[in-house]
Image 1: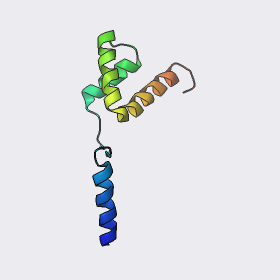
Image 2 (image 1 turned 30 degrees about the horizontal axis):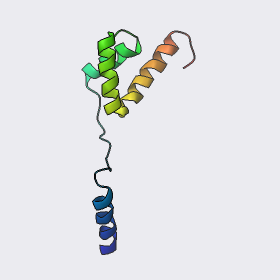
Image 3 (image 1 turned 60 degrees about the horizontal axis):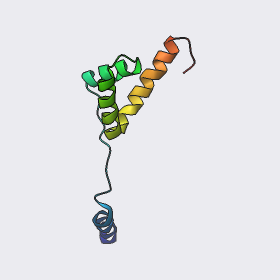
Image 4 (image 1 turned 120 degrees about the horizontal axis):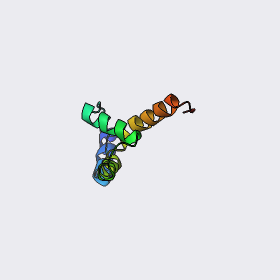
Length: 80
């Protein structure tokens, strides 16, 4: 068991700053609304740029946005 902790300690000492976890959480309603409006093309250019910046910082939000776009495509008679 000692060897296992030594390996882990060595790994974290070498790559600790580069290792990151992903937080699991639900999106706040305000953010869901903004992503939905973005998917529908209802945000101003400034709001779009800000949301894109945030999406770059939080790529896990993209899955929700993709789901919204697929749902909209389905509503319009297009295949998702």
